[in-house]
Image (cartoon, rainbow, N blue to C red; front, side, top):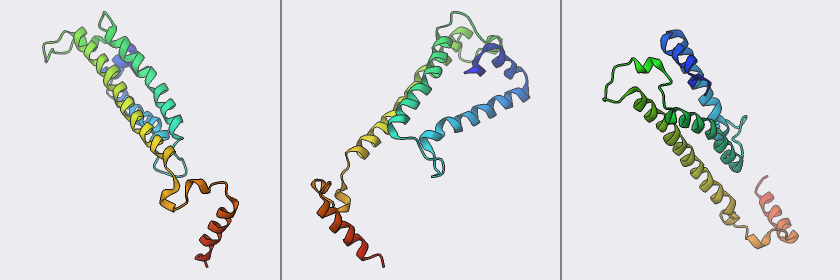
Length: 158
């Protein structure tokens, strides 16, 4: 969000090394941002499903607010783009408003799609039974069944 402050954004567009730094920061923060949801390593595991949903919801707020502020602005925020050639015949303000809408709507839509996938994974995970292992649901809490089951699992481990 900080890189969208007009002074910083303009500086990054006018100074090549700062622009490279800006994109390195974007890449680094994106990896850090998605790590709790997509972690591929057991040493740093994913956070639980419901926390992933809360995390992504909260993560979307700054992006949505920034996109809304950019798209609802009644003046051009970035003079660099005001001086740029008009490729599609849009005014600088219209171009900015479309960019803000893309950030606001499409960015939010992407997060909601990911949250939907997580929700369905959670609901499947939460509703599954031990049918795959052959343990009937009513056997839980039955000490005799649990003891026989433990003995039968231990027989083949010599």
